[in-house]
Structure formats: C-alpha cells, structure tokens
Length: 220
Image (cartoon, rainbow, N blue to C red; front, side):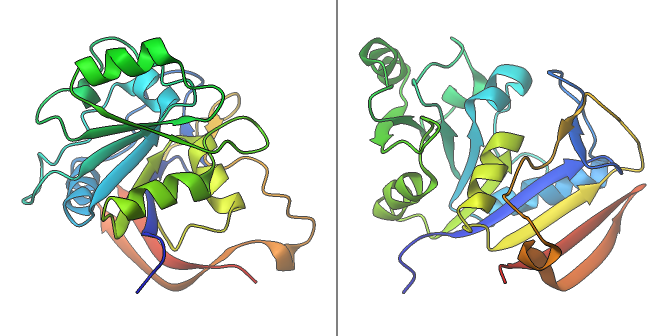
C-alpha cells in the first residue's frame, strides 16, 4: 500500500512551454483536450491547484465534459485567502483548502468554513508555502489515493522539486506565447542534463489541433 497518493500532473502549455500569458486566463486546450482533462478528473480522487489559479482562472474543478463523479477539490493557499465567491467553493461542498502553519489566517478559515469548505493546515516549506509532503499527508489521511495536479506553475514546480510527480500528461498547443508568459516549470536545481527528470513509457496522441504527451516521470 502506498504511503502517499499517486500524483499525476495534467496541464496545457504552448509550443514554447508557457502555460499562460502573464497573469491572464489563457485557454490553450482544444475541445478534445477539455474532454481529456475532465476524464482525468473523473479518474482521480482529488484535483489540486494553487491559490493563484483560483484568482486568475476561477475554475470549478468539476467533471462536466466527460462521464464520472466529481473529485475532491483541493486548493493550496498558504494564508487561506481566496476570492469571495470563488467557484471552487460552490456546488456540493467537496472543497478542501490547505494553508501553511504560521501563515494561515483565522479570519480566512472562518470565512471558508462558513462557505462550506473544509480547512486543513500543513507545515510550510522553505519559501513559506504549503509543503508538498504535508499536503500529501493530509490527503492520504482523507483516503485520497490518486491525485490530479492541474497547476499553476509554482505548484507544479514544487511537486517536481519534491520528486512527487509520478506521471505527466501535457497537452501541447501549436502556439507560441513568448515572454513574459508564465513557464510551465520554474527552477528545478538541475545543474546537468543527467539530473533532469525525464519521461518513460511515453504515449503521444492527437487532441484536435493539439498533441497530448503522457509518460511516467523518472528521477535519475
């Protein structure tokens, strides 16, 4: 039995590795890509994003364009501060917001709980954000075995730095966003190519005009 959830990162990026124009909602997925993403949600126990994704994109994180049940919706928000009326807090009350010890605000906790969300607090990492290990431990305690991480860039980077991404599913749009678009991944402390995480058992498929690359992440 695994001591933590199996983690899959699923996201869309441009041909030059950007997940969004700087600070703006950027719809890179095709219709087929959205169906694939919703099917991925249905195949996992929980779907996770960071607070920045909630502020910029305001996603529902539910399953609508594929058959299946809604997963637990998880947001990493160090201070527990989210926009009032965020869509992720709507619907069936299956939302969990995880804050960071020493930064989580009591007033924000009360607001979230009044909105029907569950709240948990995990240890913080060296940057003061919710630690990956702490978040995974909380989710494991809640019975989450398969976790889907959809972003944003800082969250994906933190999971990769912690070597806690087991599988990558990347929808690549045939567009170039350029700088200062948001890169898919930030610094990973890779000093040599042999240290770089790589994909094994790679499968490539078409999603309309886009391409989906799936593979298991290997940390050498």
